[in-house]
Image (cartoon, rainbow, N blue to C red; front, top):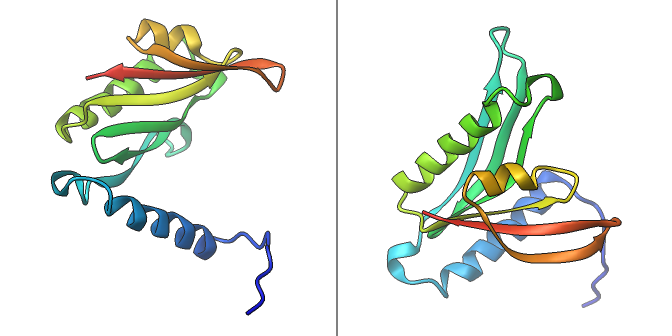
Length: 139
């Protein structure tokens, strides 16, 4: 058999890799945490139905991992990011998560996350000539 590496990326291929990794991980987690994987999709929507921000992440066993939190520039500093984060945190508590983790770059929202109770647990310097921060908040 001959294998090749392909960069033919489509939804089916992505789902295959993600689902196989989840399947593998399930073998190593305690039974009470199995089946506790779910995507988080919260959207900030105006009265016309236009999406102006949101959070994309996933509940992974006993934590919530936030991959993206974005609010359009015109809506920033109005409490929408905080409202999105608080809703995500509420859902994490409801799902009995122990913590939330996320990452941010030095030009993004570090101060915002620190004000919201997140703590830095790691950094990478010179990530695109910026600092990459890894943060966690215990629930």
